Image (cartoon, rainbow, N blue to C red):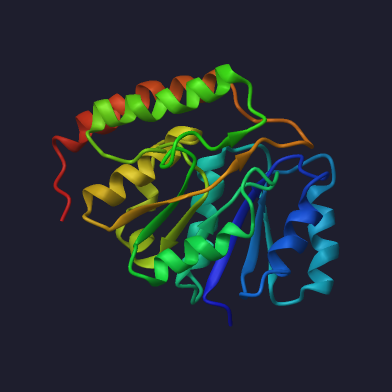
Length: 241
């Protein structure tokens, strides 16, 4: 039984899903993989099911009906993983923007005592490849904005490459997580810090997808912008113990 599982949410990732799964399983540390697919019409789920025959007992899929959002996909994956004996639970994109080899570095930081490890694009300058400048600036200053409003010190607040020790996810009430887009990433980091967990950033190089389409939208950005204010205001009336 591996102690680590990588949750990969998917919607129309047929170009990437087999390659990313094979890459994770090629690493010299045993990771299991859980794909949470939101009814991809392009056959993503079918591709995963074919691979499950080859990677029996290491690859799993949870299928949901309809595009329900990144945050709810991860919450679904977290609950599935907590019902099993995994100690380290990872978030990772399907499109190779996160280098699977960095899973080992994030896990090492967790083994060294971090409760939550963030694969950070901004802890050492700006480590982003193939993004247009407006996207880089939007992402970078989103984290500046989060630090300004919430007073947390995380450099990459919207990062989606994360390792959780299971005790963090057991402490946070997953049923109370409100946001579904990138604001979900901010909310999880904010609450982990509020509960006093040791949150560490590890520098990574983020490379924009070369296959498939980005899921970013104006609605997601708006949720993050106003959600940060909501998080901060609600924290003033909540006891984190």
